[in-house]
Image (cartoon, rainbow, N blue to C red):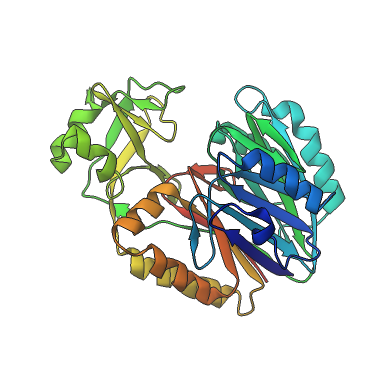
Length: 351
């Protein structure tokens, strides 16, 4: 198989699709103003080709912030695309669609992956999707788009998750997750006074969450929202750590991008040597896949902001391009199998 990436900084879809011949699966990354027109025009250009889309930035060795990016797979994939609707209330109502697409695409954990673009309620969505994918051990990579809407097969859906099932006809697939943070000190917190619907942490070890965070890191209210780039919270999940980013200050509470429940045990994280970690990720992928057809990745918005502030974003994309054909998008949250994570990079590699 091959991966195509086309882009237009001005949002010209014809420019972004130039050279795309016979796609077998398409991903559209657009901007808020042109999203609806792009979805309609893409379907007209490639009628019947499975496609998913959302509002967000895209990249290969360059970043497209406000225009349009097209990522497509050609020459050797079997694919299906669809949506689960009403994700804020009842995504399981539409699970039969995924079951039918699984039967249509076939495949196994060795050669098939699910890529999704979600409008919100990610944790519930991933649990729902995983009930089907887990039967065959199929992995998932994806993320959250902007403005609460996604597209599939030429139609726009609010409050939905768009997914693509992709089977590599010529080799393996494997997913990866990169974490550039490690534990800071031996801080351990028991969360309480949480609000599941607003993702709020009210208290940590019985004290106001905002004050606990400030007392350790010596930051003002205004600095908290940028300090989280370097010091997010973490929730230990087996051998893995789930990163929890701070979204905003809410009185003496902290609103996050991921749900925290009463009695959850949290730790504090600090930024590691992200340049060295990137090199390790690349080395691991090269070791696992000496021959690579494509790499599709999802980078968190906060990683993008952090790397941009450190003047590393362009260097990062150049380094990832050493893998060969690398492209992806910037999400508001990242999906890795049944987990909704923050401030991470997830990717799928095709042999």
